[in-house]
Length: 224
Image (cartoon, rainbow, N blue to C red):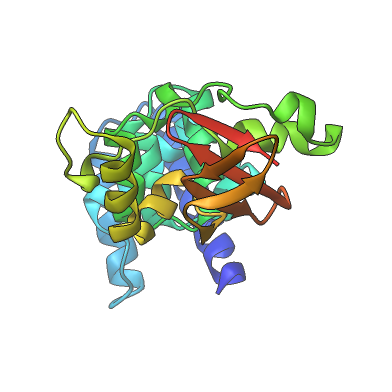
């Protein structure tokens, strides 16, 4: 299925290139797109994806990328189009493309993150990763833990205490883990640590790629 997707993306990119070149060399106008769409539909009856609208998308896809980056070919055409049409620059497109590959985002989840401005919120996290993780994992930690998350789905009052937040997270643990980024697993809540005095972490997670425990202590995230 992955190979079929790569082949399909390459085909669409080539069609987009063909449209751009014909318009540039032969000075063709918009009619070339309508004509090409009709010709392909007649040549390949029953084949989906050859509509006039999709042809324009192929043209835009090619003009945005010019060549086909490997990571772009690794995600579906529908996700590619969402990213091309809704993202403003290369850095934003690379971010969302990478997150689709990494987390397996569906179209709905991708749109949710774009609308929620996940890219803009994606800053070096308020964590202790620089001190606690090996060098090879530090960059991954910055990608894994953001400064800001959208937890509106918790549906709690603006003014709440730690216990109310904890209960809301546990009630919506699946959505919570999805918002955290996709590579987290829930370990425990109120996890007790034997320090100089008794101390409990209100949420303890495990990040599979970092191979690190991640403690959420209300406002701060620690790598353990």
